[in-house]
Amino acid sequence: MRASERAYGILRDEISRWELPPGTVLAEVELAHRLDMSRTPVREALARLVADGLVVAIGGRGLEVASMDADDIAALYELRQALESQAARLAARRGDPAVFAELADHFAAVPAELDRDDLVGADPERDAYYALVERFDAEIDLAVDNDYLVGALEGIRTHLARVRRAARDNPARLLAAAAEHRTIAAAIADRDGDLAAHATHVHLHNSLTNALATSAFAVDTARESA
Image 1 (cartoon, rainbow, N blue to C red):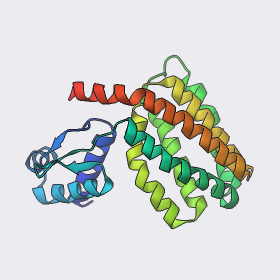
Image 2 (image 1 turned 45 degrees about the vertical axis):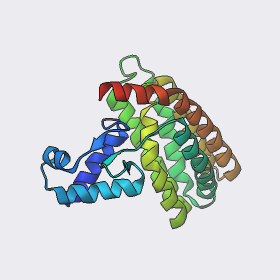
Image 3 (image 1 turned 30 degrees about the vertical axis):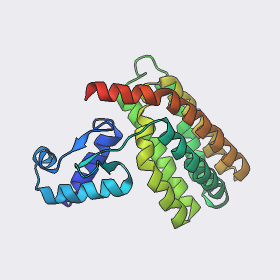
Image 4 (image 1 turned 180 degrees about the vertical axis):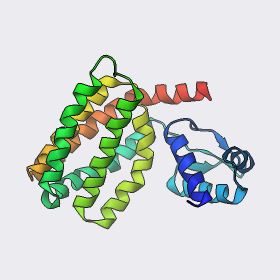
């Protein structure tokens, strides 16, 4: 892997996990030292993060991690609602029913695991759930068979990773989200595009409500720990 790719992946993940919270100044020299590489790949990685909208210029004084406030989240979900509802509808029409039936079964099993007293809040179980969501997203992308739509979806998922992080300490929301994903996957498996789109709409409404309720806390906590 090229050094610039490695730097980009590390910094993107740190931003998504709030290890680099909004407002964090990103200095090439310090980052190069921390990542044990020259400034050139770090500069290339930062340029990609700027293009992604995760990093912004601060008046000629360098770069910093972009903000993520309630208005940003609401705007992001407006776009997400349009894209994901249509993607679910197309997946129901074009996807492999067996693949989504299997995913529905996996989502059905998630609540039992997350609800076990010894696993609630445990990182491995949460990580397994998010890995399942990523697989679901990948299967949706494959099913829709539309490079333009998939490209647009990929463009917002990096930002969504930051929003999702705010819900990681909310087991009740994870349980509800797993059930919502199961409904979407089952509708796609049944080739019911209208239900798949409606279930996606419901899921995103609930997700947005939770994100707006937790985002301010997440930002404040991130700043306090910086």
